[in-house]
Amino acid sequence: MRVYFDSSAFAKRYLDEAGTREVLAWSDRAQEVALSVVAIPELVSAFCRLRRDGVINESEYQQMKGDFMADIADALICDTSPQVIQQAVGGLESNPLRTLDAIHVAAALAVGADTFVSADARQCAAARGLGMNVVAVGA
Image (cartoon, rainbow, N blue to C red; front, side, top):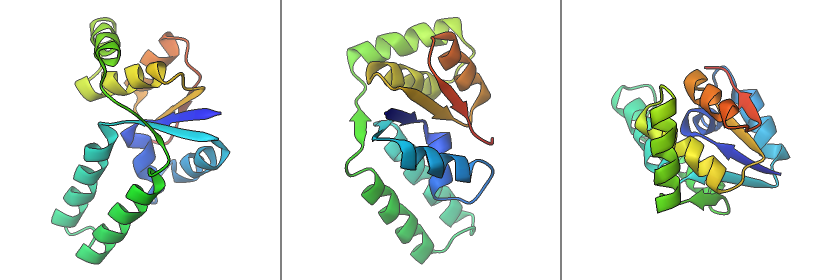
């Protein structure tokens, strides 16, 4: 089973918060984890923000980033192809999505994900509207 995680959901692998257990369970169930290429800088940005805000220290940042990079070493990473961008534009025109949220939904469609996992309610609604199996994790 190919499980696509948007950034809001995949971040829960590294931060103990609402939805973390569910994300870990879906990660374990997945035969293949899929992400958009934009998830990589999105998550590193989130980790950097936590470090800047003093929530984590430098050592914790390095550990978190290292764990993330190791976790995605064998993941399916969807690039922002013309097909993905075209689908994202369509998603923006028909749903109240933010730019990167539309790219995540489009990437999940492009890779043929069996399940779409997100903590964003608008993104989940858009993915459901496109016929995707959606798992909404704690926001």
